[in-house]
Length: 174
Image (spheres, one colour):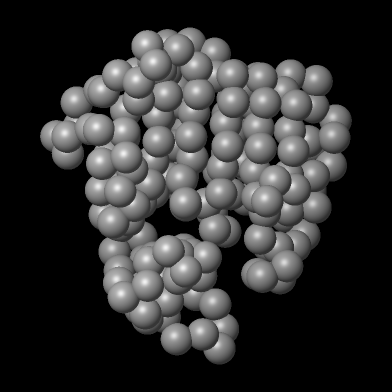
């Protein structure tokens, strides 16, 4: 799933595609009206948004056969167009993840992020705004091999992660 999940006393899931949002809501027994639901005495809040470094909309590219085969086609979904693949473009709402983190009233235990190319900008902004210290653990899947233009920035983030004393940061989460 292309989402960032923040886990603490409450849990937030941010699936950007309507189908993912609907499936997650149904799995958790939630209604689609943005109200918190309760699962094992924890609140799960599902937001139908992608994350980025500013509010707005973004192009999201997914396999052309996604609607016919969503389970097997979701692996090709990304905010970055994959060269040589047949993809359709949809628009998804984006929330500013920096503002979202600032709005939280508590320290975040775990951030699990697989945001298909947007992770570099998001992590850079977390460092720039000194918000890395708000997390105990960060697990992130990076995509510099699929998108070589992210390679240098990703390696800079890896160096920062190794030097981090405030959060345990793992950039090879797959």
